[in-house]
Image 1 (tube, rainbow, N blue to C red):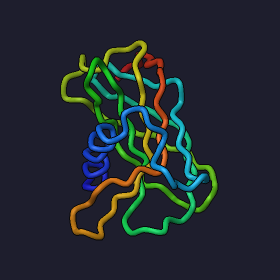
Image 2: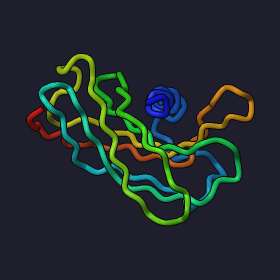
Image 3: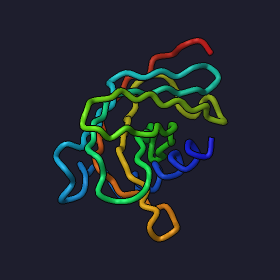
Length: 145
């Protein structure tokens, strides 16, 4: 649970640092993340996003996560975090988060952001280092829940 909280909190910081950027200069070309053009939102406020990622073993220290969020208006809502396996192969990710107010993210078109990031722990305070990002329109389908 602590991993999800750290990753979900880091998505907001990464979103603020990123804007619509595609990653930092010098990022390895093999580090990629994509978000599916479809997601789901349940009546109880549970949002589920998914996609794929690949990354090579990192040269730095700290765990690597795929974090995601949905942008509604000017607010980026963090939707979970998945620990990444960086072995050069393509993997799938699925992030789910139950928002405290179900109406916060309604069904329909929104903007999704997926970020592959390393939490650099060398200074003691985990700071996000963005490896790759994907941001585009997503269709959030209503599901029971």
